Image (cartoon, rainbow, N blue to C red; front, side, top):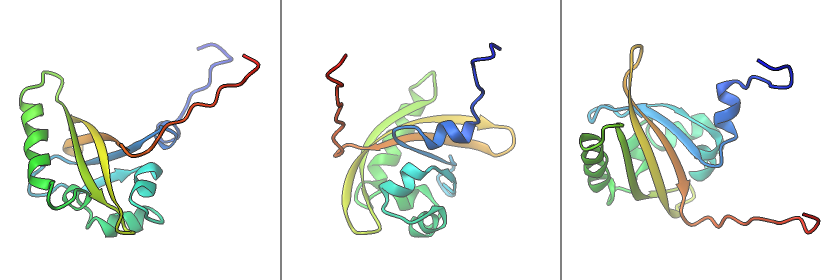
Length: 139
C-alpha cells in the first residue's frame, strides 16, 4: 500500500455515504434491524439510533408506510427470486417521527452471513430531496 493512501474504517465510509444504510434480517417473520447509519436516523426525523429503533419497533416493517408494506415486500422478494446478484429495487413511502410522509428509493442486496444468517443490506434515499451542485466559478 502506498504511503499516501489511508485505510478507512467501514463505519467511517458508511456514515459518510450520501444516503441511508440499513441492515436487517431477511426473515419475513423477524425483520429485525441490526444497523442504521446517521442518514437513516435523520431521514426518519429521529434523535439517535435508540430513538429510531424504538420508533420503527426494531424491524423493517416499521420503516415502511403501512399501506405500502405488502407491495414492498412482494416486490423485494420477486426481485431477489429473479436476480442472479440477489438485488432488489423498490420505491415506497415512510412516515417520519414528525408525521411527514416521504417517498424513498430502496436498493437492497440479500447477503448470506455465516454469523447472522440471511441479511438485507439496503441503501435508501429520499426521492423528494433535491441535490444541488455548486460549481466553483474558477474552474
